[in-house]
Length: 167
Image: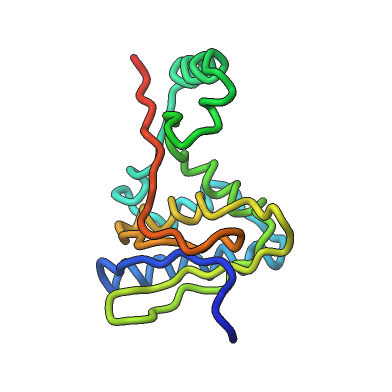
């Protein structure tokens, strides 16, 4: 197989966490291909409480505050990298992976402490790598860079600022 078109390269923090990520990606891949998708409760059993803490959980009033902030922000700023966001919820990450127009290929170790999460887009736009980067991060792996398929390899892990509710 040639170099993957789209991937996330990351530092492996531990073999155990790499195996856990591999297990989740394999299950996500199998469910995407079979179209036998499961609800969020099914997916949560693959994650421990430490991993789930990486995801945002907004109350109804906080979500309303976020929506007001979003609507009051000029469109040109909303689309920029400097626009604060509340971060991924667990449900939104799982949903975005399911609806992404790509096949999850695999997670493979490429060096002693580096691995790739590879995908193959089925179309353009395919949905991007952001939910998969959130998945890699929740296992505490460190993203070294990524290839989206439509630009050169990007070093590092640029993140948007996190929006915090006032309540």
